[in-house]
Image (cartoon, rainbow, N blue to C red):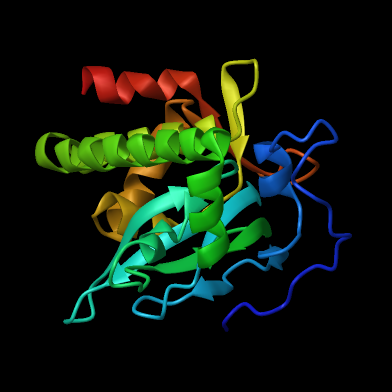
Length: 234
């Protein structure tokens, strides 16, 4: 189902009392050309091939980007978390979304109209710098993913993915808790079968690298920093 409902929030200016542009407030509030949205798990935000008319900023939760080939093969190209943008392809020409965006968990995003995003990027150095940093980080991630698929095993790729997701929920200790993600999604992101993901997840659990938490405020998947051993020593 396409996302249409916006949370009604007081419209606040993204210009501070001193007259300076406040990039953080611009990305965290509703206002002219921006809408705060609440997205349910598994809800589609936009579909691959649809007209690109907005850029999105994640305040909380997780979003996956999925591409489907002409032959119906599906691949998860990214799993994004708080502080990241998506839908930025609409700023280029042709203005279409090259992937489908779907919420993994309950997610809060700010939808920024294309014309608003383009105008603010031209007018404000702070947001331009933030957005450029994001684009460079995304490009580096894509290059790393390519090398990962070329040279690392599926077990190593899974370990790296879990550690990357843990960075979005990083705590001070050696263990981070991430929302539980289906093995189908993990398989599509890693580029292997669900049965292989299940095998590796059971192995990681036996070795103490991960732990399933099913109750309380820490419900989800505990990921230990020691999972890095799989990448370094396989």
